[in-house]
Every structure is written in C-alpha cells, then in structure tokens.
Amino acid sequence: MKDKKKIIGVIAIIVAILAIAVTIGMYFYRNAKPEEKKETAKGRIELIVTDQNKVPANEAATFELKQVFSEDNKQSVMEITPRKDGVVDFYDVPEGEYELEIVKAKEGYTFAEDKKVQQFHVTANQINTINWSCTREGRLLQVTTVDKEKNPIPDVKIDLYDKEGVYMLTGKTNADGKTYFNLEEDGEYYFQLDKDCEKAKEYQLDETLYKVTIDAENPTFSTTVVNEKR
Image 1: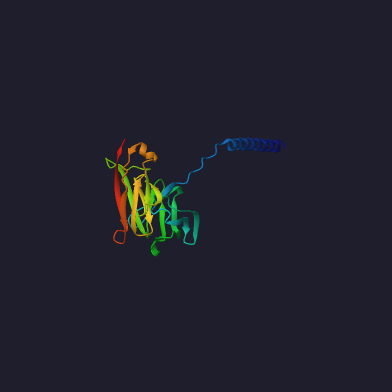
Image 2: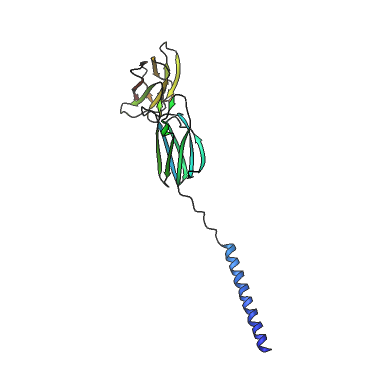
C-alpha cells in the first residue's frame, strides 16, 4: 500500500512539473517577438526605346511586362508606354525572370518581327537596362538649346510654323536641352524660341526665326541654338 502511495505521489509530481513546463512554454510562445518579414530581393528595370536616329521614341508602342515562372506560366504585371524621353522605369521588381512584349505599336512606328518580345533576368539591387529600337516613319526636326559653355538648357519652349508662317505647335526641350518635331510632309518649316517662356527669365534667348527644309535627301534635320545666360 505504501509503495502504491509513493507511485501515485511521484506521478502527481511529474504531472505538476509537466503542467508548469507547459505553462512556461505557452507564456514564452505568446510573448515571443514575431520574426520580421524577410523582404524579397528587388531590382529595377529601365526600358529605353529609340528610333533609327537614336532619338527617343515616346509612345512608340504599348509594352506588357510579365513575370516568367515557366514557358506555360507567365503572370502579367502591367502595360505601359514610354514617356517623352522614350524611357519606362519599373521600380521594386522582385528578382527573377521577366518578359517584355509589344502589345500594340503606334501608327508611324515599326518593330522587327523578331524583336517584339524580350526575356531577361532581374537582379536584386541592380538596374536592368533594356534597349529597344524601332523605325520611325516620316520626317524629324530636332532642336537643341545650350548656353555658351555648351551646357543643355531644359524647359525652353520652341514654336513651329509652316512655310506660310502659320503656327503649328510648340515643343519644350528636355533635360538634355532637346526637343523633337515629327513632320508628316516634306517642305519648308520655321521655328523660333519663345522669348516669353519661363526660361527667358534666366537666359537671353536667341530670337532668330530659323528656316528648315525637310525632303527625301534630308528627312532628319538637327540644329543647336546657343543662348546667353542673363
């Protein structure tokens, strides 16, 4: 009988110890700090679209970005068109395999049949640059504005006129001091820097009315206008 009581006593002590251990374990479990979520390694994609003259081809096409898990499993991320400088930036892209495909080309632009899809790998913490070329139809006038030290002047407004002197449209120079006019027909054109634009407060803009001839022999005309800082 005494041995039986001893056994029961030992069992009770073991049960009590186990209960205490479970209680302590649950306490630490409930009060433990959750592990910080592991951030997926990310990179950046820079798509640069230019024409046969290395001129930015803004809005030349709509591109679709897809994440590639396998040839039969591709997940669409987004569709987008290049901005005015012909560039598209995709930020915070998880590392992995991707594909860019031309969904629709804008009228006046053509892409080689074997260059409508590009696959590539995105590397974390790196800029993955994709250069894409196309052919632009029609004529092009390129005007660059610089100061006397040859530094580009951005945000200069430039007015374009037809051969009769009738106003057609206004362009604005980009960060490289360049602006582009896509012309549908051959002929004589005139352009002039807008002396009333905001940049005229910083620079003594050239007020010359420039004449340009665009034809089959000269489908692309490029010129630089030098301006003096006030």
